[in-house]
Length: 190
Ligand SMILES: C[S@@+](CC[C@H](N)C(=O)[O-])C[C@H]1O[C@@H](n2cnc3c(N)ncnc32)[C@H](O)[C@@H]1O
Image 1 (cartoon, rainbow, N blue to C red):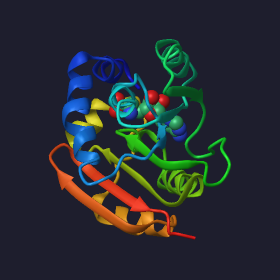
Image 2: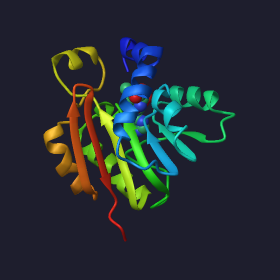
Image 3: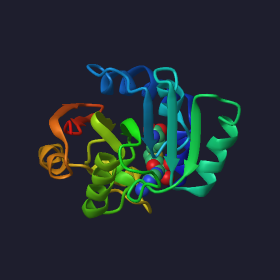
């Protein structure tokens, strides 16, 4: 993340936006999975609200400094387990989670191929019948300018359903609002 982006993502305003608008929209029609994997928690804006809805939350963050920061923050939390790791190569066995999620992080995964690998990994680690869901930002000139000197591969809402289906998800649902693209898909029952 560049400096402006880091400032935004660590701000109280961003946390409020994620917690009161984005996560509730993403989970609108979903039963909260008991054991949930969050990919790319960053400064923990979504982690803070997800932890209130699940029994156990494992958060995997690629940036070592952000992972350490979040580990310190949730060190005494019985619900949250923060691990340093990569969503495109998840360090978990098959079917380890009831669900997986990611918020405003896909555009930081530097190619469509790696994003597809993250989707395939999510489909692998979620149990049959479990759900993968989240929200990502919509692309555009202002969005790209904000990500100067940074990775920015926006997710195209028009191709996302096919990509999630190719990764192994059923019942894929896509919705678009000004705040972004919402997605969900279910791992087929065995
Ligand atoms: C824009 S931040 C969003 C953070 C948080 N989800 C939020 O909504 O505030 C994107 C985060 O995803 C992390 N990230 C990027 N690629 C990742 C990957 N392959 N696996 C895990 N985390 C990743 C980045 O390090 C960064 O912390």
